[in-house]
Image 1 (cartoon, rainbow, N blue to C red):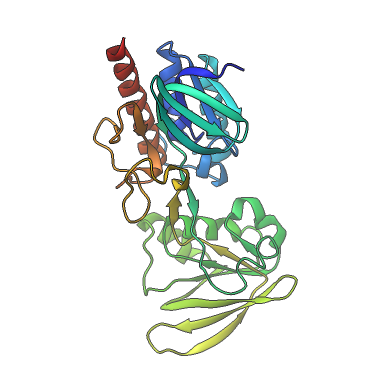
Image 2: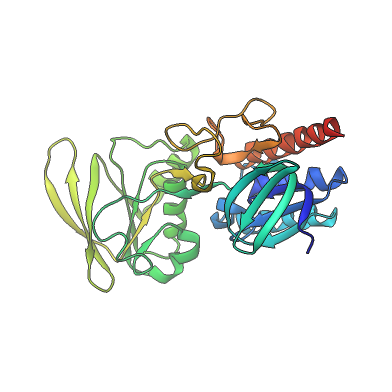
Length: 307
């Protein structure tokens, strides 16, 4: 594989794949580097119902695969690797990866985000043994069992609803007294007889030895502590941007997001950022795709001005 490109895109989610589509169609030599599976976070979504063009919805995995298929059709190259650093050199940027170094005149950053951890005892020890961040991946393992979902946003409610297909009961635990999810999802959740809700409650410890057996809980208003027996716990308490490899290169906000302007430009000429890693991103598939297209158009303009 070539080691020098016009554009290197880091991340294969909707932002990265859209950027790849636009850059490749502009006849720019383009490489996309992805460490996991194409689609990013949406690959874990059982159903995407709010992406235009799919009135009946589409699985997140399939949407990611279709985006990848469309981009590579126009000449986008891809490599499976993890990016460890970016260095600035006289003639562009060097992208360092676990599969060697690549050089580019412009770089589009779209590595997306990862689920936040609860940070409680038992979480890391029981990861993969009842602790999960992906109901689509692990839900079938808990057929006819009681599971808990931690969180109150769209992801928590969507995945909780998915889990009702397998589990005998899904208990959603939220630190507040009302959900943050969209009204449509709330209506579905409250109408589902398999779903129960524990309000004003936080998890202090995940209990178990070789597998999850329960949760140690605390009511944030009364201080009352209790124990809940569950076989699995699915955690949806937000995301953090994958920007660790950019430390010292770009200025990041307190949460680790990259600041850009409307053209997805960062403070370094020739480096653009798109999707969930961008400050104030709505974190939606459609806006990530729009960011990627905008970044690719800006990169094309940047390269034309360099000639």
